[in-house]
Image (cartoon, rainbow, N blue to C red):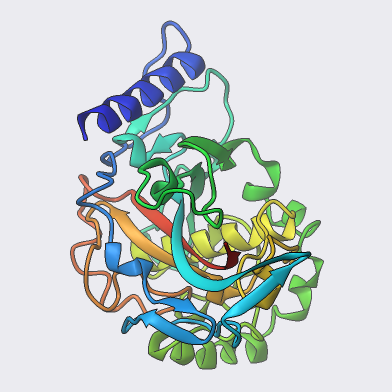
Length: 337
């Protein structure tokens, strides 16, 4: 435990030295809040389940699970194996309205030494009018193959290898803050920018809250709103939990559209990852790690689009807990040896 915490502190300190200018303080207004993720006590370990072999759950769970391949045996080339299905924690994400706020690195706020990423300084306004529902967020995406580097399961080829690393910082992405530039990667957004398409998302909201989101309604993020535009600008911000989960869903979709993230679920994923430019929402679960870790209960790691009514209490503390952190769980089907 102490070695893991020391390693994370070292990472934060190294990044601070790399980005900080010699005579500058924390950039921008607002104090960045957060804490390091304890890989033992802050993880919802029941979110690993269910574990299946073919269509049979060998370790059942009351959490919804997408369909698994029916046959218990599989073949990848000439290599036979067992068709396994499980959930794997693979990414950490900071979601904050304060630029350069690394929530899951202890609330570290870095100064890059140049003026970039500060469009999202302001949060929901209290002055009235339509602007009070607007918010703008940034996301930091970390590699976090928890099961692999903790060696909970040894010699399992299905696990994603690697170590903790920062993979993506939205502050340096021009597409993330400008909805017009974002149209480059989501030109189809104009087809769903109408009341009828948005009203249809009510069905996705109900489905994701009761069971699983509807992958056919790819333009919907369930109860959170629309997946478009694929950036951090939220025009219908109800609260920190709702808006941050919507932004994280959009960010995951954006990575799939840019072919950075790939598909890992279903029969196509048995022998390796595959291109998934239109993200299947059923592939992900989001577990809160900051300000308060969600480690148990039915909605500890809900699917994309689930209603946040039961998740909001205690998840936004004025002044000391307004920055959100999440652990991303990914469905994996694999032809194991």
